[in-house]
Amino acid sequence: MKKYLLLIEDEKLWEKFKENISTDINTEIIELIKKKVKGK
Image (cartoon, rainbow, N blue to C red):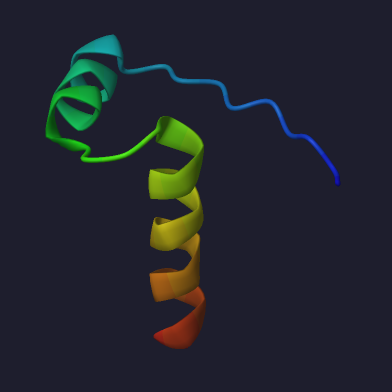
């Protein structure tokens, strides 16, 4: 398994994201990546 570092510049946007997720952050980010890849 590879690990990546995520740098967040917009802390307010990050807080809103964290408030709206239903699972852990890693799972949410993976789901967003999957959706993005399928759309192309």
